[in-house]
Amino acid sequence: MAGVTGRVPLIAGNWKMNLDHLQAIAFVQKLAWTLKDAGHDYRETEVAIFPPFTDLRSVQTLISADKYEIEFGGQDLSQHDSGAYTGEVSGAFLAALESKYVLIGHSERRSYHAETDEVVAAKVQAALRHKLVPIICVGETAEDLEAFGPSAVPVKQLRDALAGVPADSEIVVAYEPVWAIGSGQAASPEQAEQVAAALRGLLGEVLSPETAAATRILYGGSVKAANIAGFLREPNVDGALVGGASLDLKEFSSIVRFRKHVGA
Ligand code: PEP
Image (cartoon, rainbow, N blue to C red; front, side, top):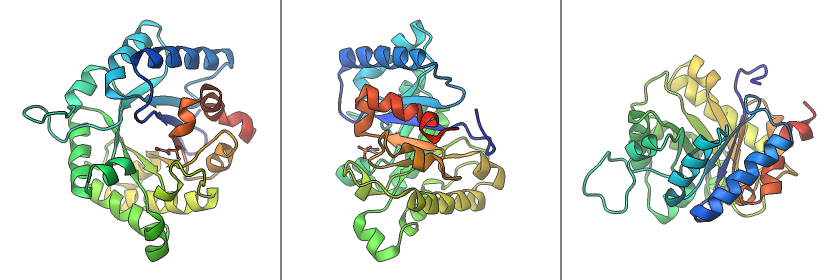
């Protein structure tokens, strides 16, 4: 259910480099059964998982055969469509596997693989060419926070990522303060809301007011069942990108069922 904003919350699990294809099959089955037993309505809260590339075919086959409503996508894609790019994965291949989403510009890609804002922008273009919905990850480091305050760096990263993006594009934005990722120290809901509001303002300026109003902005960084409700109470936070806790079936299912904690 979209609520007053018209935006259906999205809970996305970034598995990072965890779970091989056999473990992935077992996990997705258990997740689907757990959510079914809990009476989860996917129209009320969308669920997406981001397994390693080698799992995607198995996950697609299972989801399609058993008609699960869980969405999935890649953790990255190439800015190129095909050719001599050893080790890269094309958006065309992700689309052929019925991926709906793709993560772009995760802080681990930016810091360990030297992804610049220009590369992130090229990858957003590649995703849109293949009709994938890019989940554009932005966020400041602890040093950025100290030097520039909370929203300057994420807003600049998003502005750069949106270069050349058509005004009516479907995108998702994930605000993930780097200092909160995997640290156990989540931002406060108020901090997340402040940056999400600034990001939505930028979407209105660069794309259109309608697209800004329709675009989901997720918070990511040490999200758990115990803190999800606080984030989802904020008017500009439309879901979560979950790392570590997405590998724990009980914890992730409970995050997906956040409305029970919110009491809505
Ligand atoms: C992430 O990697 O996107 C993330 C938010 O990780 P964690 O939830 O473990 O902080």
